[in-house]
Image 1 (tube, helix red, strand yellow):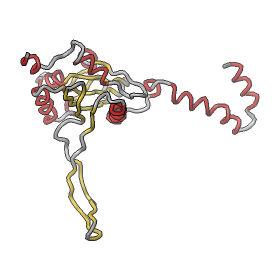
Image 2 (cartoon, rainbow, N blue to C red; image 1 turned 90 degrees about the vertical axis):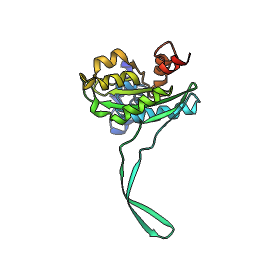
Image 3 (cartoon, rainbow, N blue to C red; image 1 turned 180 degrees about the vertical axis):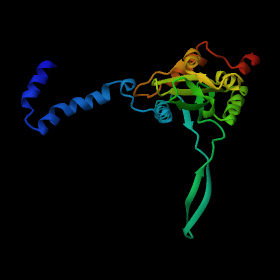
Image 4 (cartoon, rainbow, N blue to C red; image 1 turned 30 degrees about the horizontal axis):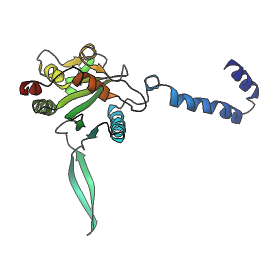
Length: 219
């Protein structure tokens, strides 16, 4: 590497030479250096969407993002055959972000992220989402929250019942970062897939981890 740099240094007589020698190196590092070092994206939902496409492609799971409901306010009619929405607003989602099927089980989960170093403020999750998670668990489904702490560049899978219990505790206003590390599973990040969250699901729900109370009662 040192010899290569010396050769390049003597040949750097113009900008074209610099680009010729160093651009391939920069591009190579961009695609090789792990995501955690480069911090490519802080958008948890984008990473999950990309991961879900990959899981669907390799037939590991069928999981999709639920569409956000829209309130249409105004519709224009340029002509009789066409209608154009000229004004609309996003409604507050009535459930969680994602649902699907994995290993014969219905799964339903919410994705959140926070810059707060101390923890995840409960004001970022809506009461109706908590109620929806309760119903999923009651009916035998798997419910959880994928929680990203952008300040630490870490993403955790938090069991739905754990999140519900913490949310409904009168003493707590947030799920602390320390608690998330304690009760959650750190999701490994990479390129393909971006978030290996199904590995965390396997560990929590299919490898002697948390079992749904409804399933236990049916045995």
